[in-house]
Length: 103
Image (cartoon, rainbow, N blue to C red; front, side):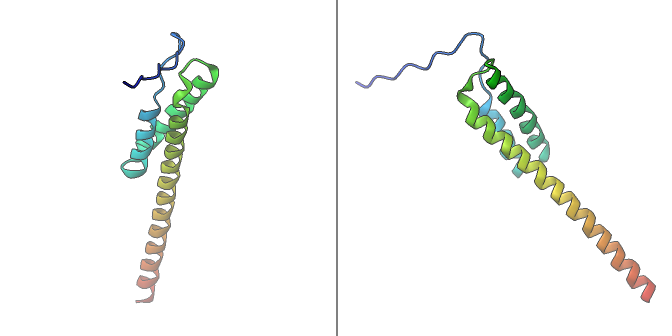
């Protein structure tokens, strides 16, 4: 019969980590909608701060950090998409104006 090792004891005053939720939000931010990425970035920053202060369970620090990084990536990709869209619009209107002026 195999024995299951006991779970590590955590202080009763510590809040449980939300690393899995933050990681899922970060991934959803990349795949579906940047709002999830913003939420992952903000929640991840706050939770990492709480873990460093000793008020939150530090076992989810890796998941929380990964979710925060995914959130940052989703925001950066969204901003790059917006900048590229604006440049395409400027280029398109410029070419349309040049075509109309030459006709």
